[in-house]
Image 1 (cartoon, rainbow, N blue to C red):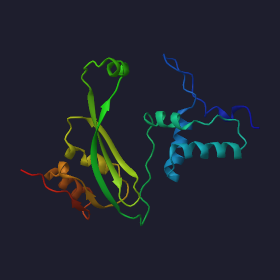
Image 2: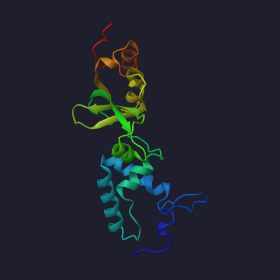
Image 3: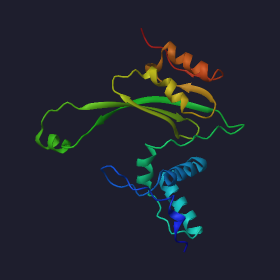
Image 4: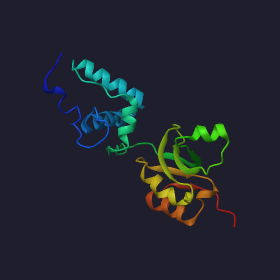
Length: 195
């Protein structure tokens, strides 16, 4: 077993503020998330890969679990992969759905039948039609217009886009322009809004 300072950069610096002390450094989490991106893995697979690498190198280092990776990924910026030369174009399917936010004490409202005002959020998702993988996602307030999220969704897709398909909620002139500017060769399959 390798001991000593091999894990100095892996373990987090002690925090001087209130709250639970982090166990893993930003370097450890970003290393795991970068390997996840490179090998296109799920979080549990990433946890297993890091565990295998640590074991192969005979290091005495703790392995961040998938929930830690997910939570810390929100606060770290990980570089995206540039599209591979000759990468196949993506046929992007876009839609949105409403999500109800539940807070503490929600079970009391359910149990006693009290009426409280629930808050809603809207999740905009872009899916690669060829693989079924989510390649873009935006979480917004419930009153945000769907068409306004076309640009942020397109910015998240690294590969060239062959087609952009969405429902009539995305059928505004701005949507067509945003796709045309970023991906001039892409076909836009969005029915126009009924007047």
